[in-house]
Amino acid sequence: VCLVSCCTTIVGTGCQSLVQLMVAVNFRGRVMSLWTVVGMGTPAIGALIAGTAADHFGFPLVLAFPAVGAVVVLVLSAQIRRSFRLGNN
Image 1 (cartoon, helix red, strand yellow):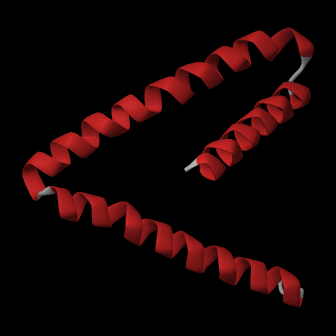
Image 2 (cartoon, helix red, strand yellow):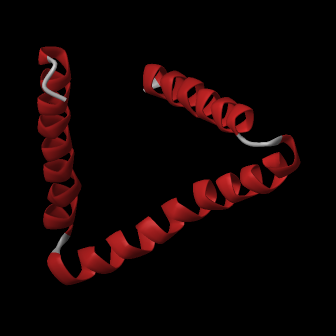
């Protein structure tokens, strides 16, 4: 759990730094405020949707849905990576 927390913090800080460096100086405050709104609001909306879905379909099915989605993304990412390695992009 500690390793995941450290990695999440490092990636989050890196992403915020990258966004700040890519945006024009006069828009940094606006962009970072949107970053904060999305970063804090999305989990709350997701929890509301997941809770409602769990009430209707049961928790195991709701928990299985993102797991299947993660596997699909993993497989697609591996295929895309393989195609770039082979030069078939």
